[in-house]
Image (cartoon, rainbow, N blue to C red; front, side, top):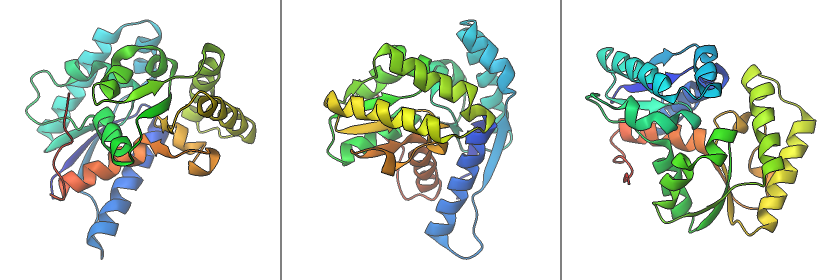
Length: 237
């Protein structure tokens, strides 16, 4: 079993989900007392969040590169970045890294294409929805990606940063997300990407009339399958 390097802390709530999901996947695959071989580097999210808010993406990239090198030094065979938004600095993160990064957008695209879906709606942080780094990566796999209108994007982002990263989950916010999803479906999407690792703490497949793609679960499952030699890394673009 390869050692999975989890680069987390953005937020720790979602990183805890990653740890749970990779171990459940190993137990499902191997049974008995088996659990995942992992090393975890958890950053201080307050520092990363300040870099995001101030547009200091180069600084964030350098910090995550340092963390990824720490995972490699600790014995990780590959790195799993436990956040959608920070894949914005994936290229900077991998500079000089001697082990591969399992890119979250690639695992998501593979799942969407396997479901024979071509037009998907994307929910995530304001950075993920508004900036091209994530949508372009999905589009390079041949997918048509829609994001909510500006007011809905603001709602989705606010709930993530004001509530979910602090472990706050409310029925009111779940209803707001359902409304956003419904408007995306009206716009013609065939599936919805839960493109922020905290979103799965709030909504599930039952909250959408079309198939959903929970990126945290998909990423964790792909990591385990690769670690166990059940699959190769998904094709990059």
